[in-house]
Amino acid sequence: MASFSSSFVFSQNLFFFLLFCFFLFGSADLSSTFYASSCPKALSTIKTAVKAAVAKEKRMGASLLRLHFHDCFVNGCDASILLDDTTSFTGEKTATPNAGSLRGYEVIDTIKSQVESACPNVVSCADIIAVAARDSVVALGGPSWTVQLGRRDSTTASLSAANRDIPGAASSLSDLISAFSKKGLNAKEMVTLSGAHTIGQASCATFRTRIYNDTNIDSDFATSLQSECPSTGSDDNLSPLDTTSPTYFDVSYYRNLIIHEGLLHSDQELFNGGSTDSQVEKYCSSSATFFADFSNAMVKMGNISPLTGSNGEIRTNCRKTNS
Image (cartoon, rainbow, N blue to C red; front, side, top):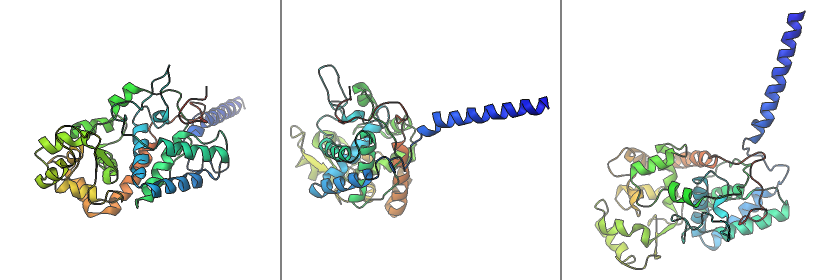
């Protein structure tokens, strides 16, 4: 009887311990139904706003997608990218990869205002960025995926981490693989996520060195770009990352790499006689494979170090902390 009693107490204690762990850790997991009861109109509100913004300016779809990348690569998907500088605080907006090129903040502001009207203090800015990225891809003809939700917003940002962790336009293949690996993303996922460059534009300053100095570039392609991007000046002149279909989400980006028409040095590195050539060729022949892989990689990227549970906060204004 004593043995039975001891076993019962042990089992009971184990049950409560596991239950405690579930509520402590399990409840912190992201979930696709996180706002189902607390803010049922959240996803439809975001989708409507993104469709309107992209209809007004197709480039905005690429900008909102890029916001998600640049947010997640700096200390996780926590909306730190949205924090404005103050007299006592320096955020990430002035980091070299972001300054003068990251866009879409006003669209996020609009979405946040609309969501706050529907359900105050419930939906995080970090989740809005993640959903807006997905809806932007869909609006431009790309795949959809189920966004995991429940992120909370950071109360800090890191200029130094933004400068260090976001790969640049001059990155080599090994640089790219390393940068993504540090975020838990493998080489295949790096190539897949780079396909986001099938939409959007880049400034002359980011590809000038390539079009004047790189040898793995189509000569006619380089010459055509030099008219818009002289060897000096005109740093802010823009060219599409995918010259074939710059406002449509497809596999043209990869096809351009095979004919040595990648706009950025880092783009062409994916097809330059290295370990990722075969994956580029695979995507060229199967948009369905690319779409499926991109969807999965976006979910994985969106899960990078989210703040959940009691960590962080739900900002009422995405540009500043609540206190």
